Length: 233
Image (cartoon, rainbow, N blue to C red; front, side):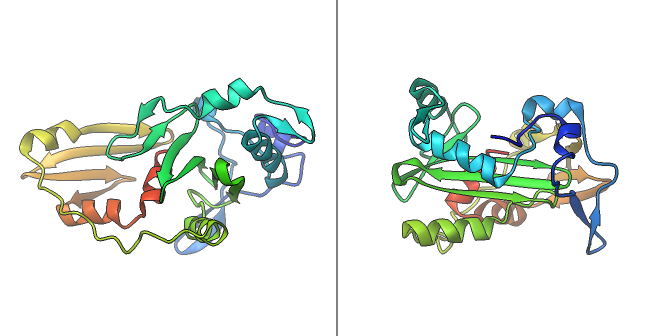
């Protein structure tokens, strides 16, 4: 990996994609470049498709790349072990820095990254030696529809979007109070509160009611594969 670094000042000396956000319906460059040191332990790595492809190839071939053992086989095996079940899902687990989940009886391994101005997603099917890498220079964007379509075409999978959502049971007062609080994923903060028997979320200075219909749409409008991928943020 020749041009992969954790140092912003190193990254910008190479051909560099400037981060953008959508403001008033138009793409705008984020200035200054987002660089919050509080987020560094969560990743904050600068890379490119070529470098990440080399890592993915090595990962899916038990650590071997171009005839050399660049990663130990034991390391690769440990990274995909099912360490913690993903709440609310079946056959989905947190591994070491990765999420492992099954979709139509095929095991996928993935990880996504999102920050101001950028989005990324790596999704692999190791048993089929197949992977998709998505890199974008737009806040929170991972081109999920394109990623899913590429996966379906290459592996012969059918989308599960046609599945009807299960009914969502209303939350009790005690359950709503459990959700109330402040949630932070720097630099973003969400405030969840209970008012008149309803849940509200406050984000970026605006408050939104979370009714049963809204909660079910947010969750079920995504396929199982997408929902599992959401846990990799």
